[in-house]
Length: 389
Image (cartoon, rainbow, N blue to C red; front, side, top):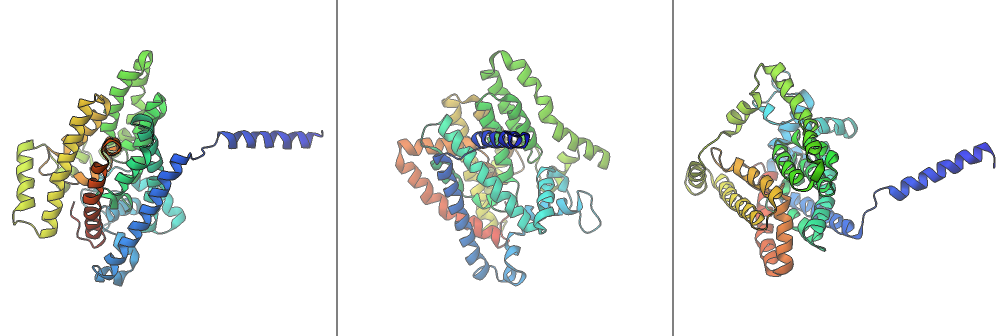
């Protein structure tokens, strides 16, 4: 054999080895991917009535304008102009949005060349990854055959439209689920690094880090100290953002102040928070669409509290920490805000519901019967520019 043939042979062997070790979707992975793709078809179908029946003003601007609402516009502005862009382009209090999603958006835009399309691409791809990871977590941690159920319940959830829009939910969920799956396999370094990236996409990543610490203390054995020490890496991305804000604004609390000024998120007695939200939901202070959103917020907080209690009862301590901190933070603000979106990020809810529906099929059927109409309503509210969550 000549030297050239030997080189080609080694290349073929290396390529074969790479292919053998490359990620190959299992039948369960393919099932959840089919559910994800079919749900994207449902979202696409929802844009039809949104544009031609309810969105006459949007129709004049084109189909993509249906997706240019709320945080999608804010995140695209950050990606395009930065946090402190030229006059007329910097939105007040936008430093409350961490830079993870805008950075990814800017990278995708370099190829796609359109901001709204770039956001939709990110959510589509990240959502597919999240669906596969959620399916695997449900199969590994809650029971065989539950992966497709968990993903179905996620994509049918009331706020599922935000997994399709140019929002940060899908990207965060992909990173958080990857981190949790790695922790389940005791790959602590990978888990911590993914949690750090998730934290710079959404600050909920800090709650994920807290849950990972509990998971490490429970499962890492003799590696506890080394694994906990790795969290210095997880805090690096968010620490860099904090240093950037300090250098740009001269204020170490710039992010916190933006949350307070822009979204009125500051610590409030949970009793006062509930009273304020109840008045907004069933009083006459706001238009009907806004009151409807506040009613959903109350139901979402109740779902989060029940999930946390259930996790404590079955002694899933780490997941209870993540869920409890997420809901606790939102239930102690001025009023409940964006809680249905936060439920998208609580994988124990979807895995637990899948496990419940396997034992009590009627529970899954009831959930779908209630969730799907509400999901359609929220989708239409968002696509027509009437969502205020």
